[in-house]
Amino acid sequence: MAEVGLSSLSIAAKRFRKKGGKDDEGGYRQVALLGIAARIKMGRKGEKSLSKDKNQSSASQDAQDEDSNKTPEPYNCSGFFQPDFTELCHRQDMTYIPQIVPRPRPPAPSPSQAAEGKPEKGKDKNKQLSAPEPDPEPLLDEDGEPVEPPPKTYTMKDKFEYFKPSIQVEMDNPDKLDTVTEVYIRGWKVDDCMMEIFKQCWPAMERLHTINLWQVGLTGETVAILASFIPLCMNLKNLILDGNSIQEGEENWHLLVDDDSSVQLLSLQHCSVSDEAAVGIGKALGTAKRFNTKLMSLNLAGNRITDVGAEHLAGGLRMNRSLLSLSLANNHIGDKGVKKIAEALSRFPLTHEEVVERRRLISEKGSPERNKSPPPSRRAESKDRPGSVRSSSHTDKDKSKRDKPSAKKNKDPKAKEEDKKGGTRKEKDDKGSSKKGANPAIGGRGSGDHRPASIAADAGKSVGKTKDKKVKKPTPQEQEQPDVPEVINPLMEVADYMSELKTLMVAGNRVLLNLNLSRNQITEDGVEELIKAAQYQKTLLMDNKINGTGLMRICLHKNKVSADSDELKKLNDMMAAKHPFYKPPATPDGEAV
Image 1: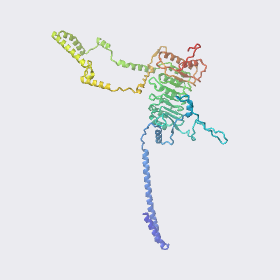
Image 2: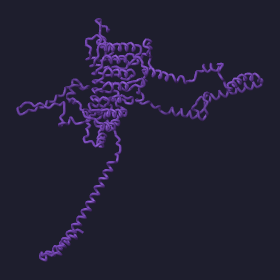
Image 3: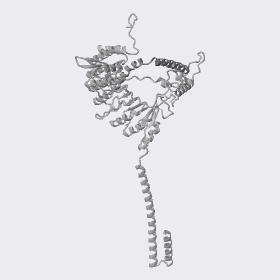
Image 4: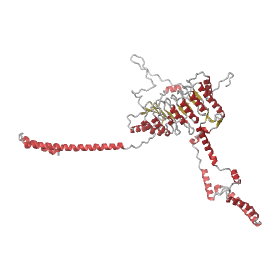
């Protein structure tokens, strides 16, 4: 239509030129009208094309909005840390994704150094050694002086490359991405979003046994997320969270000391752990009703724990029988806290709650015996009692027993002879059947086999089949499975009643081996309390060595006690005697003391 309008416009213009350009009102009007019509048609076509483009763009935008509103399908982690981590980060629309790199190690010695340090075995000594390779010629500068080569103890990187966030990993096999065993994150913020990503990745890694998060800015929320999926990491043994201070009121470190988790080492150095957090940790270690059985090492060095927190930690040591090492170095613990710790290691009086729990455990232990039926002697006594009621069936049986001998006496002599003959026949039949049933595999039955003949024959066939088959030997894993000793509740141990104090005294913790109390505020009074605890453990273990070995190492340096103190020397001598490689000093005669 637009082309037709332009052609008619050109024809009108030619007519106007032929007339000499005179003012022809009709021709001029015709040209103007045709131009206006052409412009209107062109505008309508443009509007239609613009409307089509707008409709297409709006439809595409609606489709994109629908795609964005749809919830993405959940991602199932495969156990390969690097692809799982990158995919989950892309789904969170992260602008920067931390790189996963192998943990740096010191450079390995060169082959020439290894050959010099460790000569090969099996070669003849008479063989001539190969000639050493000549040293390369040193590089010279413009002045002819040798140029110092660059050091080989580090590698050069781009500017600020070292400070970018990264995740360092240790792998059993560098070529296999599913063999990650240790994860190290240092010096960058791990927020809730990143911890949620780790919540999906780390439980799928079967070989992961160590997590080290140093100064990553943990909060109460991130610690709660971490504690929620730690039990899902089946092989996780070491959890190191040093340098993460949480604000007061949000400290929830006790969530990490859970019975469901398999963590054996927990390190919270320089985490500003206060007395309030120590209360929760002490309850997680052990109470009258529950106690932890997995944690073996707890490091609380460099925190803000005082005598109040030490008292609650000592309360956890009363019932705990799995912790082997406890470090409380560089805190604010004085003699009062040390006294409570020494009491938990020697012997302590039971509280009212612990006495009630002890009685409940004893009653539960004795309840099965109460439900058992009485022995036959008691039954006979109950029958003979004058007040016992007996049923009519028992009386009828007794009467029938009494009447039987009288009936035998009234029998005729002929009947007696028939009974004798019948008895001899039965004896012969029994002898014959016993001879036939000597071999059970044939299908006969022995004298003691009261089963039907068909069942006895099937049993004989099955015996023959089992002889032909080879007996399966147990696998080495089944043979090497150790017998796990049953954990005895400390409240069930022997208790001594102290009439003066009117309380029950129970032996304390004898499982703890290492106690670090250095850099605190302990004086000689606290050292004396520790000496009493060590002496009591020594006398107690002389009678029963099964329940532990007692303290083997106590560290008390840099306290308010002089190094020349007699009490400190005495305690050190007691601990030295318990060292596995201890050798007693020899006397001038050459005999050991």
